[in-house]
Length: 398
Image (spheres, rainbow, N blue to C red):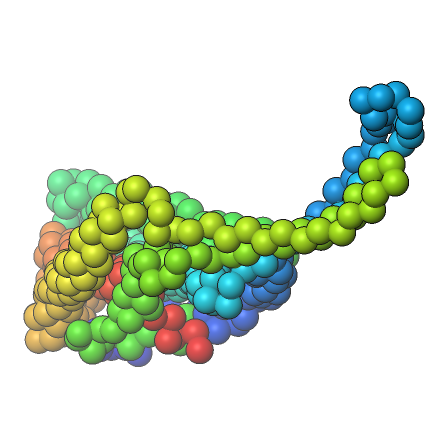
């Protein structure tokens, strides 16, 4: 790899301080981030809600009090009644409700898990971007030092008339240009680092990044699974499945009431049962037809979702592969020859066999190649984690 070649050379040696890697960042994120902490509690909250939703209806108590008098006016007194009632779901109705609640539970958890996984992919991307940017800043620093080391020689050469005023001005312009770009890259590195730090706030103070644990610079496997997203789609479409199941039954619940009445000298005990007959509703046939059509729509939607998601992943993979091929085509012999040319030019300049203009020209050529490589590397990692985010498998975090 070109960067290894640069870091092993005397001119481009870079001292990288290390402190924390992405594994430690992810662990701290899971332990301190409110979204991650709430996800751990979400299952318990949803289970409690599930019990509430499936616990049925409460008992009802009825009571009445009145003053009664017969038509002849010979007798009068208080009359009262009281009773208790409850609506009971049929076994099949309970199963339908439990099924719906279970689906809602899974959907809620999957949505929160998706958001959490997407956040962690974003964290990985920031980590890799910060490391790539640090490499870029280090390379600019080496180019700047390179020119500074030769500055005294140029000044002396100008005094002796060995180089022209034009050559000296061009040298100073190159120094200022590199210095300006160096400051811009440092600002960009700081911006990305602050974005990474903002993921943790005051809960974790990041000093330095390890940057020796980056994802391998290679293409991931193609045809990445998106079963989690497909499961979510199926769950969302099947939330109304209880409507289909409802067509098979005449009623779903029964109301039972027990009464005691005391009317002057008469005591009465009574019981009543109420059964709502679903089949008596006029629109039932239309509802059944609509539900059958919705089943067909759901099937078509699942098929369309699979096709769309596969196209998204294929398009993302093609973009990733293009960046990868472009990087490798530049990182091979072209970049190695450029580094060799830089070393030869510096050696020749040191013994007076090359001019300042040649040094500046070759250095700018090498810089352009290296910066293209750094930009492509940053683009590769950005698209890599975008590719992972499209499928939300989260397998990297298990």
